[in-house]
Amino acid sequence: LPLKSTEDRHSEATMKQRFFDVRGRAGVGRWTPAPPKPQQQEQPLRRQRKTLRSTTRRLKAVGDYVVAGDIGGTNARFECWQLGKGKEKELVLRKKYPTASFGTFIDALLQFESDFKFEVGADDFEKPKSAAFAAAGVVNAHKLCKMTNLNWTISANEVQTKARWRRARVLNDFEAVGYGVLALEDESAASNGEHHHLIHSAPVSPKEPKVVLGPGTGFGQAQIFWNEKTENYKCFPSEGAHGDFAPRGPDQRALSEFIEKQKGYCELEHVCCGPGLENIYEFLSGGERRPAPDIAEAALNETDVRAYQAVVMFLSILGQEAGNWALRSLARGGVYIAGGITPKLIPILENNACLEQSYLHKESRFSQVIESVPLILITNDDIGLSGSCWYAIGSL
Image (cartoon, rainbow, N blue to C red; front, side):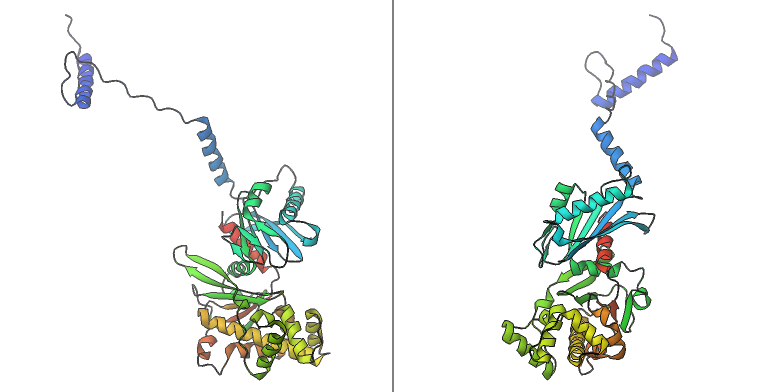
């Protein structure tokens, strides 16, 4: 037989070593080389496309659209924002629709989508990547809300199936106000920002609880607590305004008895919201009833003594409840008053300290604790929309 070259012997030795490594012992009978390793199969085309889409989606995060909504009994307000780098965002479209013009919430939303598509053009239109809607009513798991003062049901699942939007969340209206507080540029803006009016000054402590409350058509309330796991705040809505009214002093006790004779009981919202202001005026005037806007205007213009007295009692009750929440939550992150009524009464607050005095409650054994909690009036009408936008971006 011809002699084998050094290269041939080396190749054969390598193949034998592979054989011994696989079998663990010398082969029985004739030696056979180990089978070659199977070639790695290519990814299915569907998986390649899915990976490409996810990569593209990450690259297109800058430029994505988010939608915020604030749905009230009279109007449905929507905003569309386009995201930029970092925390930057640009307002694309803002619309307000009368709720009476639409049979359902989804009808109003589809109208907004149509207006949005027209605004940006068909070529640049994309479905929003995330949306959040604030609504007055009890919200179930951020997915469903049957509104209190409107025959509408807001369903996140319906938004996803009928409008085919990817993400949708539903918030309690004052939960959205709470997130609107978090949307402020920084904590110092709470005392010095153009959208705020400081009622009682105290340091705003970081990571401490916050409270938002405010009278409008009803009396919304929510608490905000720091979450160490997420390193951010989380807002928890409350229906505390439907708890019993705790009157302070003989005039308020007489007011409570007046409401009880009419309604059978007296809850806080009966005396601290728009209709509540009307109830107070009716009590003070001996039965005459006026719309809340008229009462506020007469008080501001000092054309009706009873109107002024009603507003002062109204603000005192609001201050009491703010002080109670400062104690309940030890809200050293601040107590924030929102709603559509109180900002209109700032001229009265500048000349009458009734709200701050009732808030601090000097007669209380814990007045020093309340003094350590700042009280801030929010004057921004779009705070709920800001909170919805903040939440929608955070859901991406």
